[in-house]
Amino acid sequence: MDVEKQITRPLLLESSSSNRVQKPSLTARFRRSFTQCAGVFYFWFLIFLLISLVVFYIPRVFICCIKYRVSSYQCNNSIVIEHDIELEMVYLTTQDLMDLLCLAILVKWHRTAGLKSIFRKLVRLPKFWSIVVMVVVSGCYMSIMVNRTAHMISTNQYLVLFLCCVHCICMALVVPVLNYTRINLFCSVKKYSKFNQILIKLTLFLQFVVNASMFWLGFLQLSFNVSGIDSKAKATSDVHTIYLILRDSAVVLFHYTVQSFLWHKSFEDDRNLLGYKEILE
Image 1 (cartoon, rainbow, N blue to C red):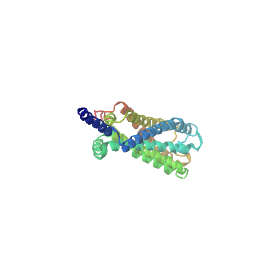
Image 2 (image 1 turned 120 degrees about the vertical axis):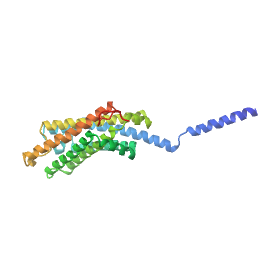
Image 3 (image 1 turned 180 degrees about the vertical axis):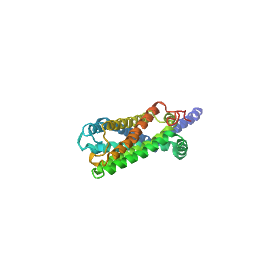
Image 4 (image 1 turned 90 degrees about the vertical axis):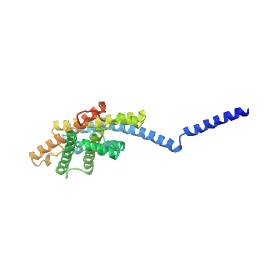
């Protein structure tokens, strides 16, 4: 009996100690619960963004262009539904939040050393400088729009233009860094769950849908000669012509470049899409 007690006692101690090791701490359980809740919240955030784009934003821009021949920021309120210019601001804000979150995640993944290495590679790529030029010209486009219609637009309309500028700047930063990011590799290294990987893929898909929509809406406005400048504010035909060239070469072309990059990134994650499609290291 004494021998059995001496044998079973260490086994009991070993099993009880292993149970204590395997039991997660309160901090770990709280962190895991918080991460799960944040993931669920972000999922519905993306769903809200998609629904707002399809149900509200695209119809508003389409109606303003076809029926009233003006840009959405110049449209009257309650065109699609009540207080839709405020809802447009809400949609653009959620869009910018998604852009900023993507940028924050990429910065966290690569850190300072990785970003410096990426920048040294980017300066040698012509497509990167094309994006920079398009963003600069887009800034000129926004400046012309505000300058020619400053006495006609409200604070809400200024905010709409500002939120559009934030989106362009964020995407101009996200695309070059994302070009040197192997998403599938990072997900495996960071040991993300299947749900978090789905959120990352869904974010990439929504970025493509948003920029593709803005490209086609901008192309539609060009087709109907919707410039964003009120007819009373067009001082000369030359100013209007230069404005349309800036819009064509900057905003529409920029969104086409971004949506084309995101589309190929979904299928060629390990390729340098801004370069010559060589395999990333």
